[in-house]
Length: 141
Image (cartoon, rainbow, N blue to C red; front, side, top):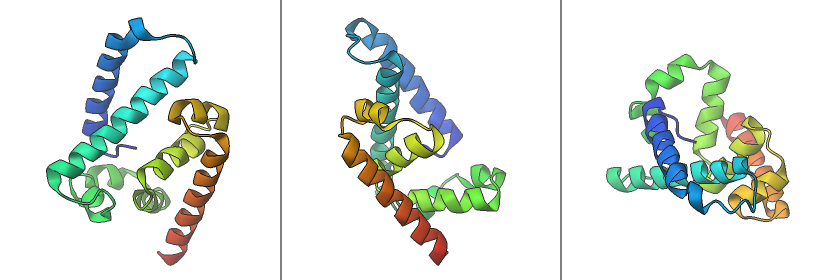
């Protein structure tokens, strides 16, 4: 969800700190993996929102992601991957997170439901809508 590698490292460090501090409160209601993934997802969304407020730029603004220090990352990608990344940036945060969990992580909807706290049906709908938006973006561009 975080494109820049340096920003990803910062978010990951925050995830480790929150995990360490919250380990005593882990109730084992869910798998450790699910608990960690939820912390990571929440930290990523928090970071994105913080960047958005700091820069007073729309987080959906493609140029913000592509030109604010992100060029090095995109240069490493092949053309298809770059187009997919651009398409992902047009998605709302929740759809982007759902797409990432399903497409890149191959996570099952039941696990995603535990991570996000949303019903399986809503997640399937969100993923389907995200896929359609990505397809439309790729067709137009």
